[in-house]
Image (cartoon, rainbow, N blue to C red; front, side, top):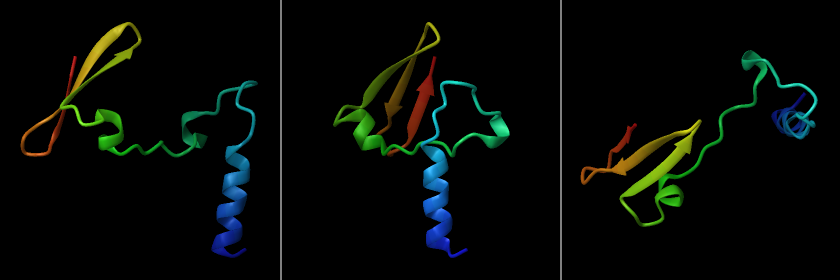
Length: 69
């Protein structure tokens, strides 16, 4: 199987309906990747609500990210 065939097969399996049963963590899909500029949209701070808690994602002047609760 060529690498192109493998990628195509991997993509086909990623479109499987996940509503019936959740996959085990060891068989989960790879994590999503999002560019920080897309999240922050020109701002230096973003608030994320997760399970009833509010988290703060900050971009520092040095270009680092800090996530605090």
